[in-house]
Image 1: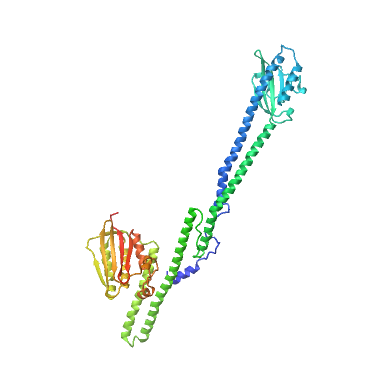
Image 2: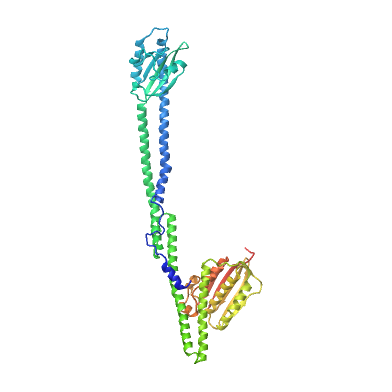
Length: 503
């Protein structure tokens, strides 16, 4: 893509405003960490407590019924022992005794007592039922206990307790092995229900207070966790909108601090890349304008005066070709960078002889070195050294290193290329006795678009892409590249690649 098209495409990209959809949290406000913490704690803590309250109420109700049933059984047994002689058909009736017995128990224990004889006649109980046949609808289970001779208990709503829910116990009265009647004891369950409701209500109040405490603590913890995240989101939105000067507050939990530090490093890197991109566009634009302007001026001169002066035409056409080659070299590097950044570095990977790579590169670069009056020297013992990689890519990487060395070595200088085999790796070194690289620039020379001496780089045709391409190619094959340099003494680049068939 040409720079004009690149800039045009960039201008057409949508600008996302701050606070827009960039990194917006999807969903409703309930789909946030804060509310998930609250709902999660409520479900995990309060629901089991509510279930515990319900289970406790049921257990207390069962406990009360068991205790009251035992109490009614004991009272019925005492009354049965007292009433057995009177209910025996062989003894005369004693209504006064029965009335006193029933009245005494009702007065002292709030127990409703009903006594029937063996024929089912009411001998003791409410006055309206005295001497009448027992009605099962009003005294449940008594006839069954009389007929079966077995105790019976249950819950019902008698009219004598104003139809309040009541618990009863029916006990057959025996004398000399014979069932001579049945005694029924009953208690109202209204007070029990009221007491149980009060207990359950207190438990519910306690659970609700605990739930409120849980919500409050969760909100506090949630805010302490999510507020830094929300600030990070706001900062990321501004960063995404183009504010590369945005920096993030590194406060909060350890994870938030690490995230803030990482985002700050990313923002700094983005700022550096943007600065490099702008510088690159400026440099490349200048590199394009300069040779194009020269070509236009030279072509106009040849067109106007070429027929008059054949020597001028030859000289100017030679310079046009040189400028064209410079443009071609720049275009090749741009294409190469596009391939490298697109992840298409590996190529056809296979064992490659380093000596062959060096020979091809030297043959191709030799004319340039000769024109620049620079001597090329190969230092090698001639033993084959195999590495894993793509032959053409490795040749391109070595050519970039040699081209860089030629451009920054004075006429009469020399460039040495050495190949050494070491256990598990191969070492290729390109050394020159040129102008060297300042120490402050050494850590940046492999960055894309970085140029050490911009004015001299423009003159020599460099765009700051060659070394970046070399590093990406070398690293794609598991290798590394190093540089050593001293001003006015020279520079040495070292490429280390894994050897084929060795770990």
